[in-house]
Image 1 (spheres, one colour):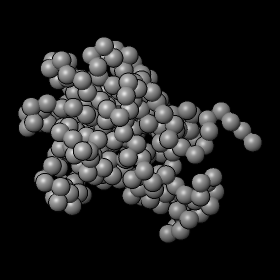
Image 2: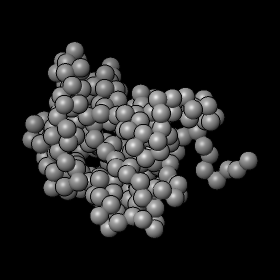
Image 3: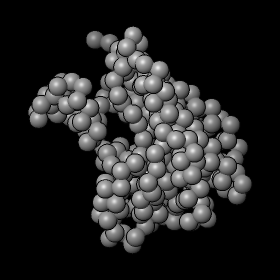
Length: 258
């Protein structure tokens, strides 16, 4: 018996990086999973790699910057399977910007991916759950930077901090519907996207992971497979009645100082 046996799961931003790890973990735990992403190549490769699990994964092309496509992804899942049981909002934009140099266009791009897309995906998923009078679970992948973050993450922090508030608001609003909604504030994580970000914005070389790990308390960056296991736990009944929690999945302690 898997933790997500017979569950229908949508992982937005699930074609690569952390989202792909979440999709793999969910399929291994018995779920039928749809992943969304803008680029077909990694999405189709992910699904092909999961073919040994009985064809319980599929890729759906979607640009989540478009709120209509975020809602349509949920509609596609419910049309294909008759319902949606679990939603993971894992897509994220991390393009750099400070308070002084962020343009309205960059700010809007962050809000579109990091806040608006989760909002309307949740809206569509919760509407299906409420209409069926069925329980469900949602996990929003957020960021430890939502506590304040670095100066070069101003629009990212603004949007993700909004997602923290949205997570708690929606959880409170729908707890009597037995819909549990939680968030995960992840810290520095070893993904393909982070590798690209370090090289593009910080001039990092091939050894940036080793240099970063040496400066971290646990001696390593956050690992996507470990986070994925925790997300699956939150999606599953094993996490009990927990809702409205935004958990710091990080090796730094907020508010503490040396």
